[in-house]
Image 1 (spheres, rainbow, N blue to C red):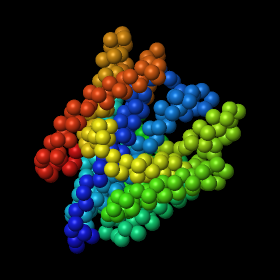
Image 2 (cartoon, helix red, strand yellow):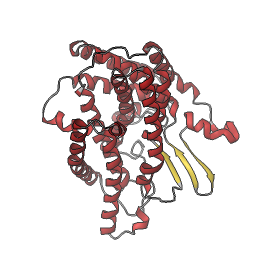
Image 3 (tube, helix red, strand yellow):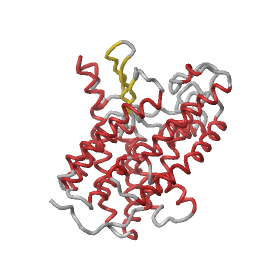
Image 4 (spheres, rainbow, N blue to C red):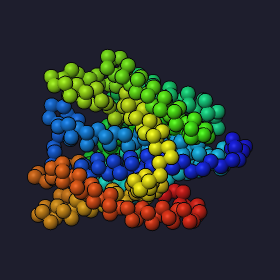
Amino acid sequence: MKSNTTQPLARIFSIDILRGVIMIIMALDHVRDYFTNVRFDPLDLSQTTPLLFFTRWITHFCAPTFIFLSGASAWLAGRKRTKKESAAFLFKRGLWLIFLELTIIGFGWQFDIGFHLFFTQVIWAIGWSMIFLSVLVFLPNTYIATIGLILIFGHNLLDPIQSAQFGSAKPFWMFLHESNIYFWSKGRGVLLFYPIIPWIGVMAVGYAFGTLFALPATERKPLFIKIGLACLVVFLILRIPNIYGDPFPWQHQAIWWKNILAVIKVHKYPPSLAYLLMTLGISIIVLALLEGANNRLSRFFTVYGKVPFFYYLLHIYLIHILQIIVAVAAGFNVKDMLSAFDKSPDHWGFSLPVVYLIWIAVIAILYLPCRWFMQVKSKRKDWWLSYI
């Protein structure tokens, strides 16, 4: 079976730019994880400040936007392949990403050679979403969109179901819809950050959304803005009166600006409907506004956006190694810092301005390696490059 068209589309640079923006923002969250001196949740309205809240909140856009764009990119790449070829590629790349999440990426987070605790995060979610998409690609795009929307809009109906209800099978429900930690023996387990049901929906909808890139830019730009605004309107309709779409209704605050923060403080693990409407709505509008962008800033973001997985791998190791170097220079023990992603030693860390400075340094250090690899990918067509 041949793909829908033999006419290749020009590369959609707005995707590369937006992807580059979110990759850079993502590094801010991870620098904060390793270098902050804050010992409470930045979204805790009883303790946070507006800047600290924003520093964490803005990074909420990274995972949904990246997975959504991965779906759109899968449709664009599929125009050059048969359905069977697309399915095979998605399936193999999904398995590859899951393997890397549990090995090279997981080691980078903790430098634990014994792999006592596996982290399953965004790469895990992308891998499983690609595996499921490898089956969905044989369906008409309207069916794929419908399945994705059902998962996104309906999965919060599953919130009352808890893994404890499944007895020995509880890891299966964690895998599907409950962010939790599971230990199979003392000191060994897996932290399931990204339950896959809603993320499968995000990638499926992104794949169907990709078909809109076949439209001329003059037509798709206003359409994207309308879709993005519609998402935000639905978000406000459901969120403000706490009708549906998030397991934690927002509570009235004593200070006016905290009421705004309470409304946009939505649940990420797993991503609620409100979370996805807010983040994807804004991202789709930004995607429209980036149509035709071609300046120094857009080209800067494109460097990171064209090699996102390469960047992802490098940034984890770079941030963690920098943390150890700075900590040792400050008199901390190396052993104490190896797994300091989620349990930093007492008195370790810096204020928010320093965290931002370290973030800027990380982005600057990664620019040349990413530009080099971007040029390699543009000049060579080796099959393995599509897996990195």
